[in-house]
Length: 294
Ligand SMILES: Cc1ncc(C[n+]2csc(CCOP(=O)(O)OP(=O)(O)O)c2C)c(N)n1
Ligand SMILES: [Mg+2]
Image 1 (cartoon, helix red, strand yellow):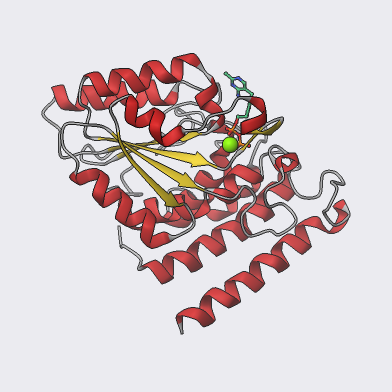
Image 2: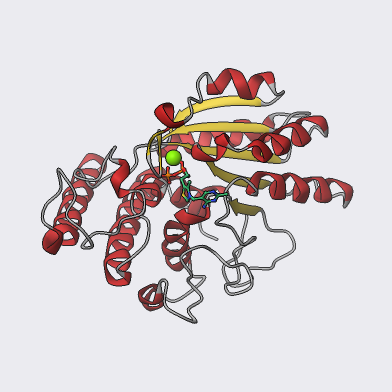
């Protein structure tokens, strides 16, 4: 897979966000905030960080990417389409009966998905189990990346995975936390305070980094640093903005599970023009990124 440079990645993430908006509007249901916030991370993973082959999704030398917060799968589908795992035209089938692109990812439907997810809190344990198995199979040159959300930290079983990975020194496991400060019903710190998140992970025996989850260089560098850490699993707490790139969606948890065009939301344009306005905002941003890099 050809690696893109950081400036190419920023532009690619912008294109991917635009396709995400189109797909969600067409589906008429699905999640906007989390997926927009994860666009830079997914783009950096698929177009720079991961060892993978879209033409051979089951390649036995590939790195493994687990998406534990399955409701954010729309961003994975769009990024995978750009990377060549599926035709871009297929994105219009999101959430349709029989489609390979279900609202929460189903592993057996689409090659390249490593797990089925949606019930929150289990992806980290799955990733830890897979990393443990790779270690037993003398496959320590392969990496398991696991994306988890901040809301998932509310669940007890999540911390079982954290302890397991530390106990077995799973240094081939790299967790990326989508620290966007929202969950379905409101701000995380109101629903179940998580801070001091950095100190908590450290206390559980992990190597901890904190980054701006929209800075492509930081995403790439943090993953390199995580791969260099021996004898401990690594977590990268990525500070992201829910709805990133679409001004009227940013920071607002009401966009957690709402697609553009579905309902009127305070602070947003009327539903009939939400998708158009979102695309305008992203195109303007794309122009800015382009001029910054020229
Ligand atoms: C076990 C489980 N409980 C509840 C839900 C319902 N649910 C879906 S998304 C969500 C919010 C989780 O927070 P987070 O992933 O941080 O949301 P986001 O940042 O994407 O808005 C909840 C409670 C679920 N999918 N699984
Ligand atoms: Mg969240």
